[in-house]
Amino acid sequence: MTNLEYAGIRQALDIGQFDKDKYSPESLAALEAALEDIDGIEIPDDLADAVTAALEYTAPPPAVVTFSCPVKSMAAKVGKPVKVPVVYNGPGSLGYASSNTSVCTITPEGQLMLYKAGVAVITVTAPDGAKIVFAVTVTA
Image 1 (cartoon, helix red, strand yellow):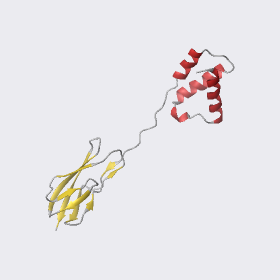
Image 2: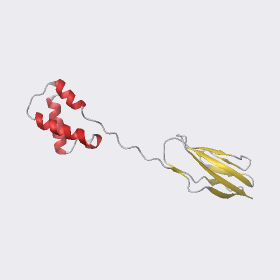
Image 3: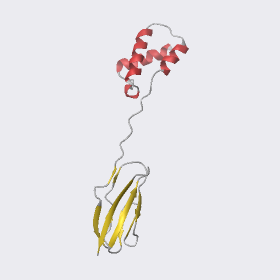
Image 4: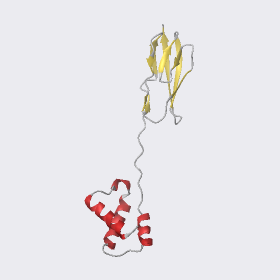
């Protein structure tokens, strides 16, 4: 990094155009101190590069993924499709399985297709392997 580039960083810091959220508070404080120390001094490029390398990038916090189901069991009627009551806002698709496909099956979109009276255990699987299990009692 050249002295001209340092001057550009100083100016960006001074006018609020430097994205401070990307760096740890400690490394920003060190940068501020270094910039004050070198103000008006010609700095060798190797030293300038070392100071720049000391900046620690702070990654943004990961997004919170929600995967939940408000019920442990539910009732449904034959011939009246019902959407599986699962909340998921993460990447990828959910997987669905029925323990009793003669009672009901599930579409890839999470719609229960109800065929005859009985009970089935529904398993919903997130891409990371997390599972939610609930029962469906189907009546005629």
